[in-house]
Length: 224
Length: 223
Image (cartoon, rainbow over all chains, first blue to last red; front, side, top):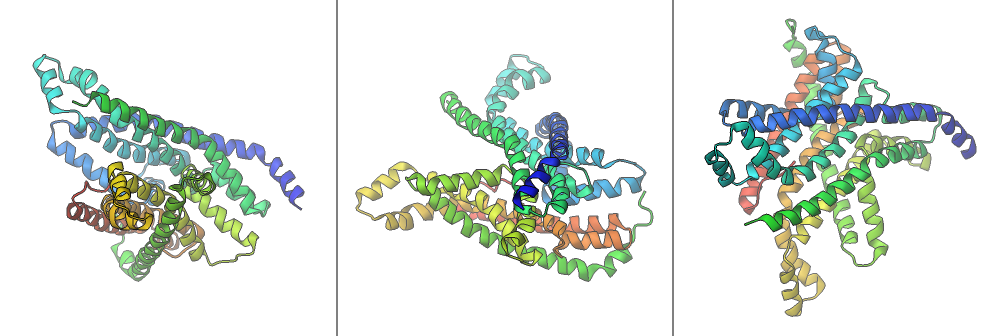
């Protein structure tokens, strides 16, 4: 009985690999796009313009206040009504990128705010331009605060990518769902699905912990 | 554009949305209580010196944190019947949310307890307090202050996570939205309405977190 199931499971390994591949590709694309967008939004948020800052804040609140599943449904079912045709993959990327950008925006903004104003004033007095100030003075110091939660956010993003299975993308979770219809052993099937995610996520969790310890130590050293 | 946005359908489905909202609230509340119970036990195990209790607690917390809730939910949903437990979807959902959030709660409580300076523990040892007295009189009252805002943050996460239960056909808020979307082909009406309801819950909990932070004199919740 269990042997038959194992054989049947072994037979569906190409499907599992495809699912894992889909999970990795989805996460990777939205991770890169979300990071870029998140940094941009975070810098704008802490920049001088009040209106832009509060608009971004309001959008971030909307995204943080609603379940990701609802966001995916909204994007997948409503954008076509507005005349924007998109497939499940694009909808998934848009939803994940938006989610990541919003959370990363908050992380980056917190990091930028943690840099003492004296530093910015000194940079200003040295005649650095706005861009130079950000790139050479503020961001390098903010990164110490930003990096550990940023990596933690990547783990959340990979896990959240499982929700796109709800609009029919064959990611790892969807593969588990498909396989369990044929091999009626939910424990085994979803244990293996879990192992798949664990292999991707756990190294990142370890990295986040290490960064937290290292950055914490470094922070103690530099603090005046 | 959405020129035929039908407010009438939303109003007609309002009782269903109301029921869904109520279900979401009480099942989240129940799951949060469950998560507190799971978290306290896990944290107590994790703070032991011997590896006998510590190792399983650590393994559990890592396993939960490194896998998605949806996979955990399906694990219980498809797995429990195989072990002979045929439970209603709602119970499976509450169980999954409790077990998932419990791992995060355990880490929040642990951070709270470890935030108490070592000197206080030593001082209470020097005053001849027993372990229970130390915990009850010195550590927990202070740790309580630090943990409330992040615990409320976790409650916010839990309410949002409960939307996933609609995927195992629990009749909560998201399910109500799906019904309007599929019965009348009105996804905009269905999903925008439930998004508004979730925002309502979010702002309530967020306000509570901010208030508690002010009362307790700690920073606001980080979600």
